[in-house]
Length: 209
Image (cartoon, rainbow, N blue to C red; front, side, top):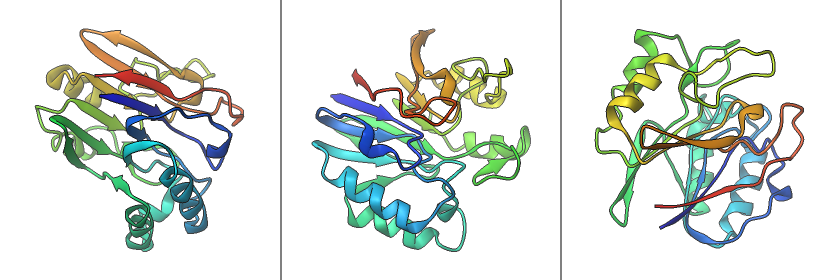
């Protein structure tokens, strides 16, 4: 199965170049501040890409998936063939995907949760047999380094990933840490498409599983 990952496009999705594959995965932050018109434009773009399945989660900028407009936003995705995951999963050809938009609290953006017990409630939902884990924010210490030198990933998420050991843990959120690394048998992918200045810089990341 060929899977393509991308993230944090913030309305610049059309500047990216895609090939084709089995599954396209988006790791959140498609909008600037969650306008439904932005969701519609993104969904119509993704609909026409050459992938059999398209999976997406929301991110901290995507407010319309986290307020009274969420039903309408989710319907836009569904009408364009995009599988939306929100603390939920799907199995495709024997590969189990799980997605969550949650990330540690920061200035009260969408899907923010306090570190500790509040955020752990979401990680508790992740099935132990997950193959591809899609979370908007990174685990602590892995592709989570900000330009300021601070690491902002989630400590609790890291513990769950160590326990579950998915084949892939994909995320975005921290633009300047784009890239991938394999640690303890898990392939971690920061699929951010924009750099820290919000310029379209990084290509989608293709993986075979």
